[in-house]
Structure formats: C-alpha cells, structure tokens
Length: 312
Image 1 (cartoon, rainbow, N blue to C red):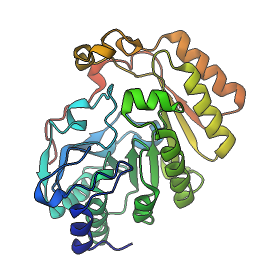
Image 2 (image 1 turned 90 degrees about the horizontal axis):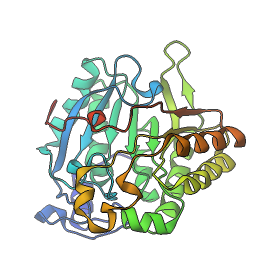
Image 3 (image 1 turned 180 degrees about the vertical axis):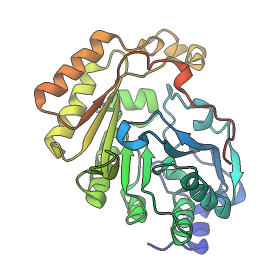
Image 4 (image 1 turned 90 degrees about the vertical axis):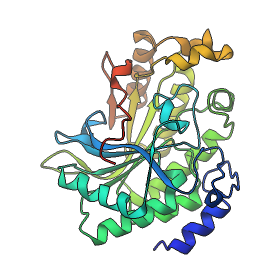
C-alpha cells in the first residue's frame, strides 16, 4: 500500500503497531513499550556479515539496526539498542538515502533489523528509495512479535522475511519477554509472511536468497524441549517450504547479573554442546532439510555489532 505522511501521523498519534497496543501518542514525544517516539532512530547502518550465508553472501547484507523494540527479551544480545540507549534520529529522507548508499556499497540486500515500531515510516522510505533506484531485495528481520494487519503494509515492499520463533511455551515467553501470547502472535505473523513471499527462491549463480522465509530459533539454556516443540510445529506446518535456522549463539550478558531472578538462572550460562546436538538430531529425525546450524564459537560478545552510529 502507498504510505502517506498523514497516515504515519495518524498511526503515531495513537500507536497500536505492535501486539502490545500501548496507544501512546508518539508524536508528542510519549513512548510505549518500545521506548521510541515518532522520530525514526537507528544505531548502525553498515555491511553485515554474520547472517545466514544466503542472506549475507560474500559482500554483506546492508543492515539497518533500528533503536527500540516491542519485545525486549531480557537476554537480548542487542540490549542497549533494544531499550533505546543507543541511536540517532533520522528523517524519512535520510533513511531512504541510507538504503541507496548501502546498495552503492555493494550490499546484497537491505536488512531491516527490528523495524516494526517504525513500520509506516519504513514503508514510505522504501517506496521513496525504490522510486529512486533501489533494486536489491529487502529483508525484514524481526522478533516475530508482529501484528498481522500491519505486516500487510509490507506486501510488495519486502522480498525476504527473517523472523524469530523464540518460544512455544507461554510460561517461558512471559518470563523472558513479558509476552505470554508470543507463540500465538508470532505463528500467525509467520503465516502472513509466508503468504506474501511464498516458497524460497535462491539465485542459481550466487546461492543468495531472492525471496522466501527463514525462521530463526535461538536455543536457550535449559529449554531444549521447547525448541523441539517449535521445530515440530514449523515442520508440520510448512515442511521444507521455509528455511529454519537453529542457533546456539545465546550469550549471557552482564546486565542479567543485575536482575535478581536471572542472576543464577539457566540464562547465566551458554548452551551446552550436548543440548544443541540433541536439538539438531531432532531436526534431522523429523525431516527438516532446508536448515542452517551454527558451529562452535558463536556465544561471544565479540559477535555483537558495534552500535556506534556508523552509516547514519
């Protein structure tokens, strides 16, 4: 759908973009759960090489890391930007230009990282950039906690969806993300994403994804059973018409030690090799073929990008 400034203003005055539906008037500087006003804010826009191989290739994905988040998991590796501590304000015109600059730098796609709470502004910036010569695919990189009615705004603008499916258990999602409805919401969101872009299309020459869905699942320490339920759901629902990325990179971060209920919880340690092997074996047994796994050494803070304003 074509996005107009009047529509953006209306949505920001009574914000219900995410499933939390805070109804904050973000145009007056007020913020809801995401912690952001109506002004677009981002912490980094640069070539990024740590995504799945079919997303970043050898030239890198043009990743724009937006500030704030409507989910805010307690263990988030991007904690500082998720809670809005890092970021610079951007105009619509500047965001559109950033997309074109990343293309000029050789990015294989534009990678919108946690953009849901700026969705109408991002849609308009994408429309502007596409009319000015943006031709590379657009990736929507999301926590999965998205409202289906607003995801429909992205139809025709996004080529690749890269959502998380973090939890099956409402107890876990309530404890770690204050969202007991996470699975119900995210599973519907992924259904809408799949409806829009369909089965995966990869370039026969480069192996890069041109269209499709990759669902990411981060194994959390002590939660292998929940991971298996998620993988079973995805395979029963989509078979091999989507890609599944099973990640072992959970990193215990320093701020968790300052939260009493998590200081000595399973979140205080990395995932063990045995836990990860059990989940991978399960994925193989149920027939998941289009998938990615991670090898050792990913659970380290050195893999977290520097949110230093580069490219903004």
